[in-house]
Amino acid sequence: MDKALIIYWSGTGNTEIMANTIAKGIEEAGKTVENMSVNLANTDMVKEASYIALGCPSMGVEELEEDEMEPFVESLKDIDWSNKKLVLFGSYDWGDGEWMRNWQERMESYGATLVKDGLYVNLEPEGEELDKCKDLGKVLVTE
Ligand SMILES: Cc1cc2nc3c(=O)[nH]c(=O)nc-3n(C[C@H](O)[C@H](O)[C@H](O)COP(=O)(O)O)c2cc1C
Image (cartoon, rainbow, N blue to C red; front, side, top):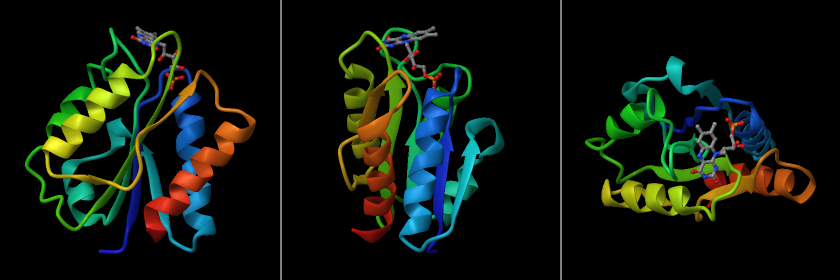
Protein backbone atom coordinates (compact mmCIF):
# COMPACT_ATOMS: atom_id res chain seq x y z
CA MET A 1 0.00 0.00 0.00
CA ASP A 2 2.92 2.36 -0.47
CA LYS A 3 2.40 2.82 -4.18
CA ALA A 4 2.39 6.09 -6.07
CA LEU A 5 0.22 6.35 -9.15
CA ILE A 6 -0.16 9.07 -11.76
CA ILE A 7 -3.12 8.95 -14.12
CA TYR A 8 -3.66 11.66 -16.70
CA TRP A 9 -5.40 12.62 -19.89
CA SER A 10 -3.53 14.87 -22.33
CA GLY A 11 -4.54 15.84 -25.87
CA THR A 12 -1.53 17.87 -27.03
CA GLY A 13 1.05 16.76 -24.48
CA ASN A 14 1.20 19.65 -21.99
CA THR A 15 -0.42 17.76 -19.12
CA GLU A 16 1.67 14.73 -20.06
CA ILE A 17 4.85 16.79 -19.52
CA MET A 18 3.50 17.74 -16.10
CA ALA A 19 2.83 14.05 -15.33
CA ASN A 20 6.34 13.02 -16.37
CA THR A 21 7.89 15.77 -14.25
CA ILE A 22 5.76 14.90 -11.21
CA ALA A 23 6.96 11.31 -11.68
CA LYS A 24 10.58 12.51 -11.52
CA GLY A 25 9.84 14.31 -8.26
CA ILE A 26 8.32 11.16 -6.77
CA GLU A 27 11.34 9.11 -7.83
CA GLU A 28 13.75 11.69 -6.44
CA ALA A 29 11.89 11.36 -3.13
CA GLY A 30 12.75 7.65 -3.19
CA LYS A 31 9.42 6.12 -4.17
CA THR A 32 8.49 4.12 -7.22
CA VAL A 33 5.67 5.39 -9.38
CA GLU A 34 3.40 4.13 -12.12
CA ASN A 35 2.58 6.87 -14.61
CA MET A 36 -0.09 6.24 -17.24
CA SER A 37 -2.65 7.70 -19.55
CA VAL A 38 -6.20 7.28 -18.25
CA ASN A 39 -7.13 4.87 -21.07
CA LEU A 40 -4.77 2.33 -19.47
CA ALA A 41 -5.99 2.88 -15.91
CA ASN A 42 -8.77 1.36 -13.84
CA THR A 43 -10.39 2.03 -10.50
CA ASP A 44 -8.71 -0.96 -8.80
CA MET A 45 -5.31 0.63 -9.40
CA VAL A 46 -6.44 3.68 -7.46
CA LYS A 47 -7.81 1.47 -4.67
CA GLU A 48 -4.38 -0.15 -4.29
CA ALA A 49 -2.33 3.07 -4.30
CA SER A 50 -1.49 5.30 -1.34
CA TYR A 51 -0.37 8.35 -3.29
CA ILE A 52 -2.33 9.44 -6.31
CA ALA A 53 -1.84 12.26 -8.80
CA LEU A 54 -4.60 12.91 -11.34
CA GLY A 55 -4.06 15.18 -14.32
CA CYS A 56 -6.36 16.68 -16.92
CA PRO A 57 -6.34 19.95 -18.86
CA SER A 58 -9.24 22.36 -18.88
CA MET A 59 -11.53 21.19 -21.67
CA GLY A 60 -15.08 21.89 -22.83
CA VAL A 61 -16.00 25.05 -20.94
CA GLU A 62 -13.88 24.68 -17.80
CA GLU A 63 -14.57 20.96 -17.64
CA LEU A 64 -12.67 17.69 -17.51
CA GLU A 65 -12.15 15.89 -20.82
CA GLU A 66 -15.52 14.26 -21.37
CA ASP A 67 -14.87 10.86 -23.03
CA GLU A 68 -12.22 9.32 -20.79
CA MET A 69 -11.31 11.49 -17.82
CA GLU A 70 -14.79 12.55 -16.77
CA PRO A 71 -16.15 8.97 -16.49
CA PHE A 72 -12.93 7.83 -14.81
CA VAL A 73 -13.17 10.54 -12.17
CA GLU A 74 -16.84 9.67 -11.66
CA SER A 75 -15.78 6.05 -11.01
CA LEU A 76 -13.64 7.23 -8.09
CA LYS A 77 -16.64 8.47 -6.14
CA ASP A 78 -17.12 5.32 -4.08
CA ILE A 79 -13.48 4.61 -3.25
CA ASP A 80 -12.38 4.73 0.38
CA TRP A 81 -10.12 7.77 0.27
CA SER A 82 -9.43 7.88 4.00
CA ASN A 83 -5.84 6.58 3.88
CA LYS A 84 -4.85 8.09 0.57
CA LYS A 85 -3.18 11.30 -0.47
CA LEU A 86 -4.10 13.09 -3.65
CA VAL A 87 -2.88 15.88 -5.89
CA LEU A 88 -4.45 17.26 -9.05
CA PHE A 89 -2.73 18.93 -11.97
CA GLY A 90 -3.34 20.10 -15.51
CA SER A 91 -2.71 22.61 -18.23
CA TYR A 92 -5.08 25.36 -19.39
CA ASP A 93 -5.07 28.27 -21.82
CA TRP A 94 -7.50 31.17 -21.63
CA GLY A 95 -9.40 30.45 -18.42
CA ASP A 96 -8.63 31.28 -14.79
CA GLY A 97 -8.38 27.77 -13.36
CA GLU A 98 -12.09 27.34 -12.67
CA TRP A 99 -12.04 23.71 -13.84
CA MET A 100 -9.31 22.93 -11.33
CA ARG A 101 -11.13 24.55 -8.41
CA ASN A 102 -14.30 22.64 -9.30
CA TRP A 103 -12.37 19.38 -9.66
CA GLN A 104 -10.71 19.90 -6.31
CA GLU A 105 -14.06 20.52 -4.58
CA ARG A 106 -15.44 17.43 -6.25
CA MET A 107 -12.59 15.22 -5.03
CA GLU A 108 -12.96 16.64 -1.52
CA SER A 109 -16.66 15.80 -1.66
CA TYR A 110 -15.60 12.19 -2.37
CA GLY A 111 -13.62 12.27 0.89
CA ALA A 112 -10.18 12.73 -0.66
CA THR A 113 -7.44 14.69 1.08
CA LEU A 114 -5.44 16.95 -1.20
CA VAL A 115 -1.93 17.51 0.10
CA LYS A 116 -1.76 20.76 -1.88
CA ASP A 117 -4.06 22.85 -4.05
CA GLY A 118 -4.33 21.64 -7.64
CA LEU A 119 -1.42 22.77 -9.82
CA TYR A 120 -2.36 24.40 -13.10
CA VAL A 121 0.01 25.68 -15.72
CA ASN A 122 -0.64 27.83 -18.77
CA LEU A 123 -0.06 25.69 -21.87
CA GLU A 124 3.36 23.96 -21.88
CA PRO A 125 5.14 23.93 -18.51
CA GLU A 126 8.57 25.60 -18.52
CA GLY A 127 11.23 26.72 -16.05
CA GLU A 128 9.77 27.36 -12.59
CA GLU A 129 6.57 25.57 -13.56
CA LEU A 130 8.54 22.39 -14.12
CA ASP A 131 10.12 22.86 -10.68
CA LYS A 132 6.62 23.18 -9.23
CA CYS A 133 5.62 19.91 -10.88
CA LYS A 134 8.64 18.15 -9.42
CA ASP A 135 7.92 19.60 -5.99
CA LEU A 136 4.33 18.45 -6.21
CA GLY A 137 5.55 14.88 -6.71
CA LYS A 138 7.88 15.17 -3.74
CA VAL A 139 5.26 16.71 -1.47
CA LEU A 140 2.73 14.04 -2.46
CA VAL A 141 4.86 11.20 -1.14
CA THR A 142 6.58 12.90 1.77
CA GLU A 143 3.97 14.99 3.59
C1 LIG B 1 -11.86 21.48 -26.87
C2 LIG B 1 -11.00 22.33 -25.98
C3 LIG B 1 -11.58 23.03 -24.94
C4 LIG B 1 -10.81 23.84 -24.10
N1 LIG B 1 -11.41 24.54 -23.08
C5 LIG B 1 -10.65 25.32 -22.28
C6 LIG B 1 -11.24 26.06 -21.21
O1 LIG B 1 -12.46 26.02 -20.98
N2 LIG B 1 -10.43 26.83 -20.45
C7 LIG B 1 -9.07 26.94 -20.67
O2 LIG B 1 -8.39 27.64 -19.92
N3 LIG B 1 -8.48 26.24 -21.67
C8 LIG B 1 -9.23 25.44 -22.45
N4 LIG B 1 -8.63 24.72 -23.46
C9 LIG B 1 -7.17 24.83 -23.67
C10 LIG B 1 -6.44 23.61 -23.09
O3 LIG B 1 -6.71 23.45 -21.72
C11 LIG B 1 -4.94 23.82 -23.29
O4 LIG B 1 -4.67 23.83 -24.69
C12 LIG B 1 -4.09 22.77 -22.63
O5 LIG B 1 -2.73 23.15 -22.69
C13 LIG B 1 -4.23 21.38 -23.26
O6 LIG B 1 -3.48 20.46 -22.48
P1 LIG B 1 -2.92 19.11 -23.11
O7 LIG B 1 -1.74 19.49 -24.00
O8 LIG B 1 -2.48 18.30 -21.94
O9 LIG B 1 -4.03 18.49 -23.89
C14 LIG B 1 -9.39 23.92 -24.31
C15 LIG B 1 -8.82 23.21 -25.37
C16 LIG B 1 -9.59 22.43 -26.20
C17 LIG B 1 -8.95 21.66 -27.33
